[in-house]
Structures are given as structure tokens and as C-alpha cells.
Image 1 (cartoon, helix red, strand yellow):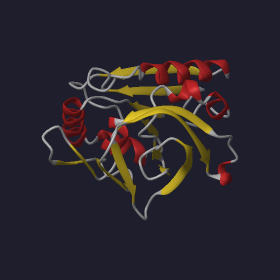
Image 2 (cartoon, one colour; image 1 turned 180 degrees about the vertical axis):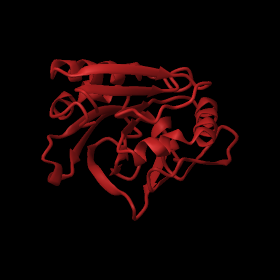
Image 3 (spheres, helix red, strand yellow; image 1 turned 90 degrees about the vertical axis):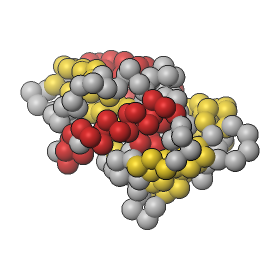
Image 4 (tube, helix red, strand yellow; image 1 turned 180 degrees about the horizontal axis):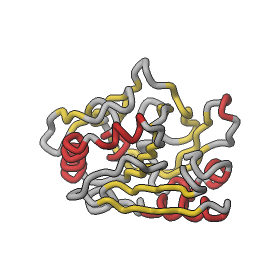
Length: 209
């Protein structure tokens, strides 16, 4: 962040915005402005290069085929890795969250490589789809109140030794293992417009999410 300006980048809204993910961009932008920050928001379509100068990157949810296309283009682009190395924060949900891991199952039923920004691997869960409200207790070291959201997914994400749980699910399924990883790049598999639902967490800081 330079000259009191927050640079917000929404990645691939043409592919990954099935579940009202624009709401996360709107909420972060509004709360930053409420704190006196100037916000420069850039919506990057899938045929455009990812800028490396952003402060916060948002990646939303989508269906299986758009998820595969987004992963392929992000791997070819390579700029999100550079942005994270520069200190940027990546907040992702649903399909975007799975893309940040090592791999996930694509629309062809095959293992699709992710970006490896999170030490997680996503697979398809068995049984009924997880739908409903979620309540999770955030890592006590962060000093934040419980996280709320709404889940609608069937994926299960396994956390590797290089990731630390951000929260543990009290109500609902969450990512299928009862936790959500924490790192410079983070996000829940279950939430949609979660910045609006969890207002107290995001009000702590415009970059808290």
C-alpha cells in the first residue's frame, strides 16, 4: 500500500463469480474508504494479465469447468506468485480457494494442479452436499470473534504440515475436515460473501480478511 491507497484486485470475475463474490470486493472497498483510505480497484478478466502491484487479491467461486480454466490461466500467467512474494494478501473462497492449493478434482474427474500457494489438497467428498450456516472459532492467537458464513459445497480439503488452521468449525462442515488453513494466502471453501457476514473480523483492519 502506497500513498495511503489500497490496491484491490478482483481476479477473473468472468469465470469465478457464481455466488455473488463481487460482494467481497464491495465490502473490502467500502470498509477501506471508511478508514480514510483511497481505493484503486481493478477487475481482471481471464484474458488479461494479473498485476503484481496489488495489496489484496480476491478470488471467488465457480463451477467445475470455469475453475479448471481459471487454474490453467493462473498457472500460465504466474504473476499471482510474484504478488504474494511482494507481500500481497490473497483472499479466496470456494473454487478459488481450491485453486490456491496443490491440486483439486476438475470437471473431467482428473487431478488438476493448483498454484501451490497453500499446503492443502482438495478432493470430492462423499455423501450429501454440505449446505447451511457455518460457525467457526478462529485461532485464539488472532484475538478475533467467531467467524460466520454459509456453505454450499461437496469438496473436502486436507491440510498439509505447512498450513496452520485459521479456524475450527463449531457448526457446519467447513472444508470437510473441520478446519481452514491460515497463511499469507487464505480463505474458506464454504463461504460466499463472507466479508459481509463476518463484519467484526473485517472491521478490525481493511486487510484483515
